[in-house]
Length: 209
Image 1 (tube, rainbow, N blue to C red):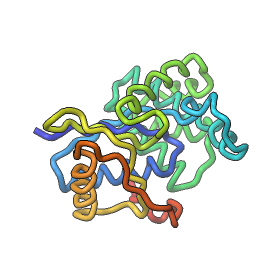
Image 2 (cartoon, rainbow, N blue to C red):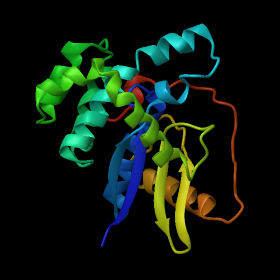
Image 3 (cartoon, rainbow, N blue to C red):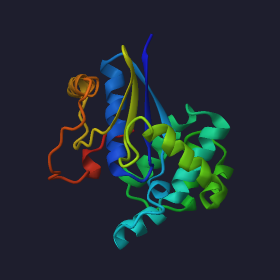
Image 4 (cartoon, rainbow, N blue to C red):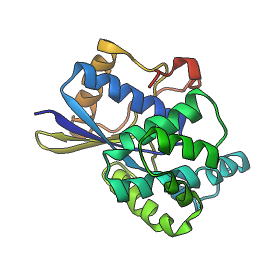
């Protein structure tokens, strides 16, 4: 039986998008099945002091996160697989602006009711986003973000933030990275392996859906 790997994503985050495309590559070479869940960086940073440019970025992130949460609640986490791919393709690959036109197109492509686009303007969903953040980041650390990944291990849950990677590893390279990430994250007491980012995620480095 395939191992279920759960990933919490903010639909606006390009690094989460890269991470999600990597996991879908891993599915092709390792016996895993990815289940996606909503995470909101806007909710996570709502009461934090951040730079003005980042606040503007966060303010635009409420809408797509609310839509994903509404879809997850109404149609189950499996619905996010197609919805996230559709949203991310329009946003990260095609560089289309966020807004109702993008949301309706993505929902239609995912086979979901386009009325879910109304959720973008519903602050009543924000408490649910906070709870979703706790579910994803509780085992990882709430000072972190997305991608947040949970994997069942022989001694209990293995949870971690990352990887932050570009370009998206493909084929067996994706599998080797998966093996290495699990080896590190599954080691008791292992907390961090990091180096400065020298590249930004680019559209042409992200795998087609």
